[in-house]
Structure formats: structure tokens, C-alpha cells
Image 1 (cartoon, rainbow, N blue to C red):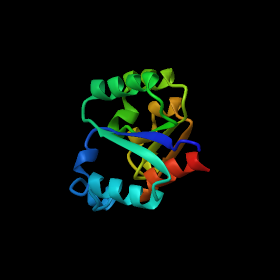
Image 2: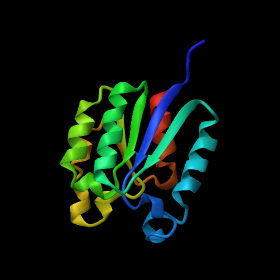
Image 3: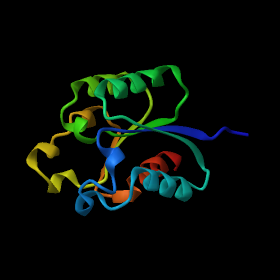
Length: 144
């Protein structure tokens, strides 16, 4: 019997405010709603561990911990840190597992500064503009 794949899903700043923050861009679901939606759609095909922090150093620390843990892949929505964080990029470069970066909105249809994603330089796959399906599709891409 093979063991289930295990995923860490990291969410960056302000994603804890989903549902309240610009629903016209991010939708009206909370992060907890998206977690429940994703887990339900996955039908227990894998093990998911969710983490959210508004603090860059905490996110870097959690990424570094992955080097000592047995995960199949990292799904990360770095939020605004995607555009600014060399520290998160450097931590991502340490990993030897697939990294799937997700964004709920299509950042290429938004402000110019959002179109540059530093963290994407370490990502295996980038998925954006998928709304609540972003996390499910990121995980599903690694289960195929």
C-alpha cells in the first residue's frame, strides 16, 4: 500500500481577510471557506496541511522547516510578498520538491507592480486567475 501524498499550503499576508478584502477581486469566500471547498473536492486523495501568516519571517521559517519534513509538494500563495520578497524566494530555492505558486486573481489584469512575481522564479508551476479553484487545481496537478 502506498502512502498518500502530503502537501503544505502556505498563505501569505491578508489572505486571512478573504471574504472581507476586495470581494470584487478575490471573491466573497473566507480562507476557511476555500480550505473546506478544496478539501471536499480532493475527496481525501491526499493529506493537506494549511498555514497562514502575515509575517515574512514566519513564512521563511515554515519553508525552511520543509527541508526536514516529508512533503510531496508546496503550494504557496505568497500574496503581496510575491512581488517583493527576496527572502521568500531564497527560501524557496532551498526546496527539492515541486513548488506551485497560486494567486486567486489574474495578476496580469491588475496593477503593473503585481505583474512581477519574484517568488515565481523558484516555482515549478504558477496558477492564477482561478479563484476558489486555485488550490484544488494546484494540488490536483501533482496527483495526476
